Image (tube, rainbow, N blue to C red; front, side, top):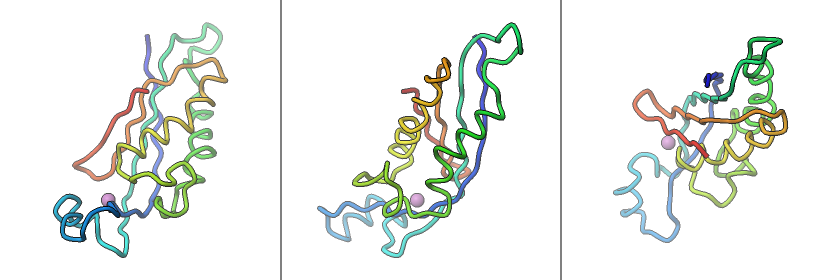
Length: 136
Ligand code: NI
């Protein structure tokens, strides 16, 4: 089994805030991420496909096709957007890196499956110190 990863970048704003809680409790749990006037991240998105190399190409998936897919299906929807307000697949959800990675997986996975391939992992790097991984 071989694993192929394509990396793309985008920038987006968000806010972590639980409406059911007081401002004090939100600040305790989410810290600066609860700031009312939003903040942004330079996200790095790693999408990994697994499979066996095709005898005709040596590829498990065309890396350019994968990059185009990530851009068309995900980056177009989220780049320079507000994740809480502008992104349909995050509507009504907490815009944590965890939920965002799951949302990205759900957007991308059908397109990978349709091409007869298997998605292995979505890794979403939110800051140089924090990333999450979702394996479906
Ligand atoms: Ni944040």
